[in-house]
Image 1 (cartoon, rainbow, N blue to C red):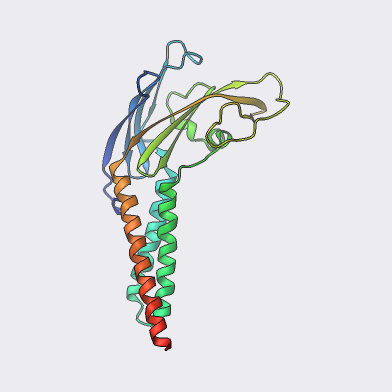
Image 2 (spheres, rainbow, N blue to C red; image 1 turned 180 degrees about the vertical axis):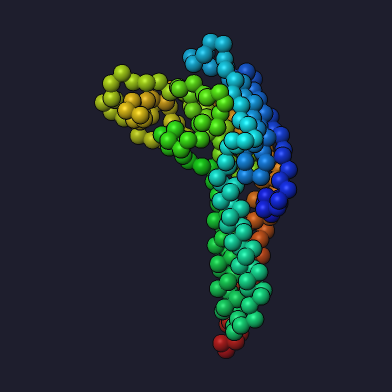
Length: 236
């Protein structure tokens, strides 16, 4: 559960990642709290390398899953607000409590959204972020790999690139589900995305976390409904 991510002891869970019915990608990742602490990934991309290549992620330089970290931060704010509300004996009316519940609801909603919505980071930002340096040895220059969370799944997106000899005359507009053909400038070179695929694996603790956040939000809504009814009765 997401509350478990807040604890000092963070279990290290291992998950397999592979492309179905092919050996384009095979390997595993270890998820520890908000980090991918280990990974061993074998690629076979004929247009990039005829013999394939293999990369690792090591514990001393993990991949940070920013969505999980953001969700933890929002949950921590919600927990702190609950404790503050419980300790505050000066709340003079249901309206004061309702206001606090609204704030708690906002934190929980933001946390749930960070887990439920995949990270739509452009490839240019992936290259500029420095995340690619986590892979050891480094990925080929014409390959970009990026991890993100989509609800209860860990998603690994792979892009292959080619360097254009001259700037494109007409750049393809970004499309959410079809990045192939998009062009961008990076390090004074124009690049084009030539292929893209994704693999994913389910993470049970994330599934539990999303469900529990949803349950907490429903409880907040029930409290707000009761305060609303109470306010109507008092005003009569």
